[in-house]
Length: 263
Image 1 (cartoon, rainbow, N blue to C red):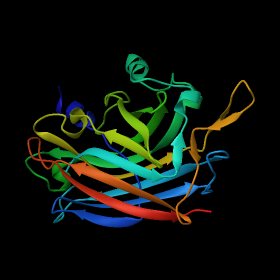
Image 2: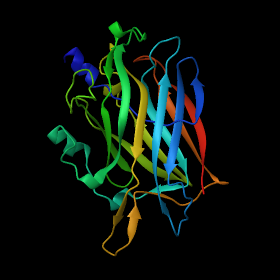
Image 3: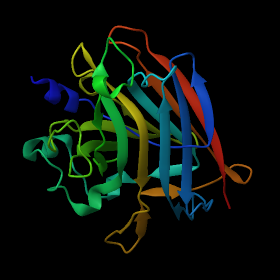
């Protein structure tokens, strides 16, 4: 596989800011979630909601960040209804090499990332050592508790000179744990480490999850995300980042926490 193809196989992610935490001496993180509208709702009268994640990942001593392997975002008082919406699968996107054939109503989030490829043996951010990768990020509903992430390249959203489809789509999950919505995004090794000698460093992600609703045959309207409660006038959230400083190194994790006022 050509080096640029290896670079493009690496992928990027995700987004939110409200507090900052360091992850040992490996990476620093900023995460901020903004909900709109941020109405508490209730289990009998849920309130449709959307939100934007803004994530920033920093390296240490001027180096680029260690590659991310997993992002887990936890949001209080929100549920999801993916089974009521159109879907698009990893297989469908792989078959066409693009996500343009996916039904419009299945697109649940869209945004951008900034990242760079570089040699695993040298974590410096020197332009001579790195290649930028800044594609559009689409997220598709794949059924209850399932989503598909896919990077789209374009004139203003290129990734190492690759074309759309060079980075394969990959899956994430959404589940309910008590009163929390838990969104898990594991990065395939082929994204973070497309080869033993090349790694992908995610530097930022801004991703907007849409405030979507659909009308059922019985006339009832169901939101994709719905708020059913808040906690002491606020909506707590947290984002846990797991990074790996080398293909064979032990992963390290760090968590950012925040709260947005909820009415």
